[in-house]
Image (cartoon, rainbow, N blue to C red; front, side, top):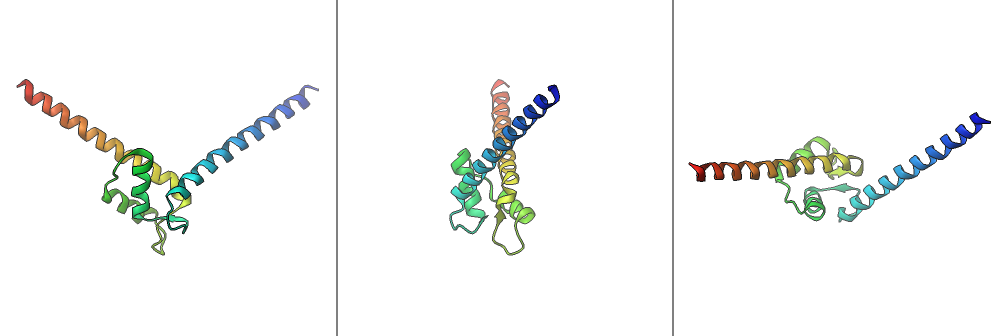
Length: 116
């Protein structure tokens, strides 16, 4: 009896996790489609920049976008496919943190110069 109850609980837990995973994937797909202006299933340079500006209010450096396209873009030159969306999000996040770090450093240096 206990093993059947445990099996039922496990099945419910697996179904719940599967449903949560599907919701996460649907959310990612919705974001990807929102910025895929030409509906070709891949993000171009301008679409990546629009994504960063729209989702994070951040102007991603062109060098970062070019590097992303070089590393994860398809051979046909269409851009970055939906499967690589998490990598784009990560790269934009890293670029945002680098920009914030640079601003903090400049502010710290300015304050140090004022104290001298």
